[in-house]
Amino acid sequence: MSTREKVVDLALMARTTEKGLEKIYRTFEKRKLYFEGNIHGTGCVFSSAITAFLCLGNNIETAIHLAENFFDEKFQNFIELPQNGKIIDLTLSKDKILVINQIKEIYSYISSIKDFSMLIPEVRLNISGALPNAKTIAEIAGIEGRITIINGYPQAAGQIKFGVSDHTARLILAAKEHDESINFAMNLKYEEKIIKLVQEKSNLFTYEFTRESQPEQVKVREKSTMQWLIKESIETTGKIPDIIWDKGAIGKEPIMRIFAKNASDMISKLEKIIKLM
Image 1 (cartoon, rainbow, N blue to C red):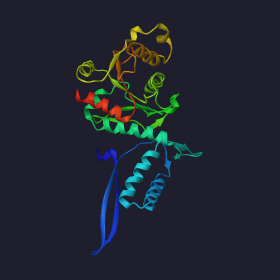
Image 2: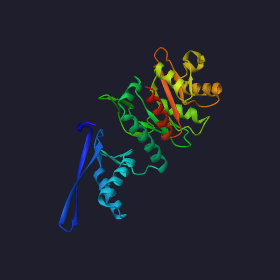
Image 3: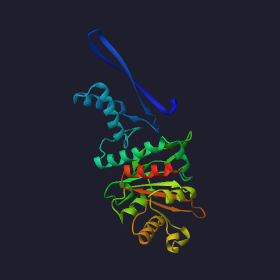
Image 4: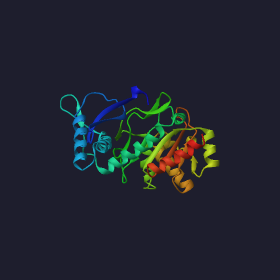
């Protein structure tokens, strides 16, 4: 991460020793985030969180780390002010925070691997995660603006929010109609050699669907392909595959779609794919 892509906080921590006051400096690095407009109260929330964790008996360094984690969890949704600007919405439920943190875990894994950029499709990549009983897109979180490539590495274009994902969100909703344990989905660039290696050298279960085999009513009906390909894979294989892939069509990019129960499950499947690259 270059200096332009990060912010650094410097903390002075003083403690009394036999020799007098000892000064210790600590730096805390975070990835820089970009937002339109003004977000008010971020410093107040952060400093209040540090104070709260100090009151719970933590030392200053631990309190800062805990406050950073708390801040990351809450820095997702915002309330628009009547005038200009917005403030942090601290009302996210525990279930939503859990989904957001799992998407962060998956993103943190792929964003540190330069070769993973080879798997980002032209339509860009997204990681979507659903609440356990999700029935609508509003109950599914994703990365606003998707994930692109910057300086050779995967880079999120925006923040993780609920209701901003479409393609992968509809995949999850269609999958959950047949298997409620499916909560996460990603769309990757189709590579024939990778599919062959996955089939030959891993235990991941794959399924190919061909767009040419879609019924005419599915082809002409807007946003109906996701439901159809899930139904087709279930009827053919009896379960939701780990990967559903297609070779594309006119105006449709070839895509590999990965399904998982949780972040650990998704990362485990991605690790198997990356090892074969």
